[in-house]
Image (cartoon, rainbow, N blue to C red):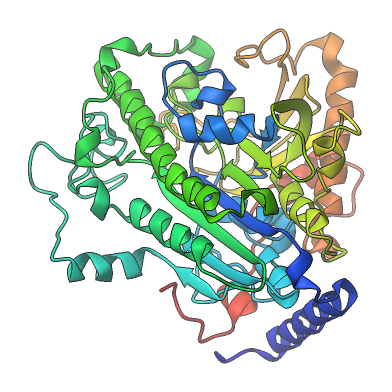
Length: 520
């Protein structure tokens, strides 16, 4: 065990005791519980999926998964950033409560994950692909295989990535190279064939884990890295789409002051190639998800397995001039969520109910007949899946701490607060020529204005509505704070928003101890 601070040791010991208490409460009749297959993609927006109505992208495997279960049409990530989103859905807690809102913050050892609960209940557990745990901890998964192991495997195969040919992508250097290169506005493949790509390797490992003979249930997470920029796809996938067939979203004058400076020089031709790259990468993703789903079907375990598919958050493909996800616009925060479990849930269903990704862990545990930690914020989706209700949440909440931004939405009205007092540290600042706006409120009627183009917050007739949603956001941020004693003692909601939307993450030492190792 790595060295631990006294405070961390106490927290770690509490977690161990709590997980063992869960195991005792849940019992260990593992043989009768369903398997769990959780499929995760990176930056996959719901609107670029066939089953969500996109007629251009080809995602037959995800479409079949949706047809066999339920498609969630209004599923929201809890933050549009990889580490924080994953910290939230693997613990069922808001990222601000876990203490992970920034990219490199490690998931604390004290956090109780799905893997830990299932492992203590007698499951074999494995995670293949991207974790973003940001440490060497396995968080309840017996097997964790990541990018480092793939590189060693690739070397054993005598293969090397081609990054020098003008026909393939160069080495990924975000914010150093022009954006057209690191978001693939040149529409080039990655310099490897399909069978050597790491996502294909992860999918095959997941398939092998599923088909292994065992006398206990299993939980397998297959977490791929596509379609994250630079939207990699193998050599065989080149030219699957004609970039000229894509349309560049219109950018309106009110968007100008918020467009990240790194994207301002992109030409319309490059923007269309970015879209073509993203769609092609998504099709590569679908192929690999198909490898895992086919293995499950051939193993004869499909009826005994709950399958969950998500993108960890959405992505903007030119809407509002943005080619990233770090904001509260719908394409960035709504992601696909598909759930199938033939033994209990009917096929071919979809729902408009508001759900958050923190609801996934309690749903899986509910299906498995297991209790989770009481401090989980998520709520089981089983009543929705069983058709007993058509509603779930009154509001959803999303925040992005690197932009000091938070949002509340009730399905129609959306209010966004942006602190606006510092330059963005994430690389997506609009530029020094645009002064900091200071505290900013945006109110959108997403029913009459689905593109979120008209900010209604300053209109006199919306004064009471704005105050109502501000109060909802304030109460949420106070309720989910990791350090509630530090919240200013005031009745001024703007002061509370100013404090709560800034990052308040755990330190590395708080999370893991002073000698924590980097991820493998």
